[in-house]
Length: 238
Length: 48
Image (cartoon, rainbow over all chains, first blue to last red; front, side, top):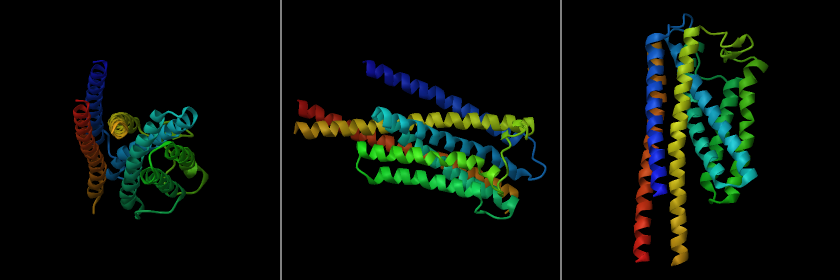
């Protein structure tokens, strides 16, 4: 009975989160395509920024959750933290892939090339490869504490690439523009207020989307655990 | 391809990617729930 009530509460909170995410996403789309003015140098293609930066933010945030959950797993040895790390890594890889796809689509009309091997782009590709390797490691090894421990180590080490990605445009000369939201001039000083507001709405929408996807993905992993538990029980009882 | 074409391609990739992932999650969840239901039914029969 208590289990039924708690699952009802979870599904109603997921329903609320779904509508909140959908509403914020709709507001972001209206702001991107109706409200915000077109940037005068790059033209209409600059609107890709309102997806490209939130995808990057979401990927970095997801990998930060992998980092924290992996540390907590190594410390507490609880399966729950391993589940969070795994689910967040999968979502992070999806959005990091979208960053690596939307970036070249934006670059082609602006830079004249799809890809350049500069520090920002290369370090982002390395980040993607690290977490693809993380998921492959999980997929290719037997479930258990050893797999969780190795994955946690990769999850922690992989995160060290993110500060490198952020500072790469400041430390080296790159094609990629310098940060405009978090800049030396101050928070959001390098952007028009309407652009900053649109980007803020889009960032909020993508953060809510992460919470929604994470909830669904964690539920899936728990169902898998329940199946494994029942299979084990059946094996021992027969 | 003009700028509008590139913008459309970027949108298609982002929304298509998200939609495909959500669809995959739904399919995986449905398959697992079917398995879980079968296992529960089987363990119920064994109990009888």
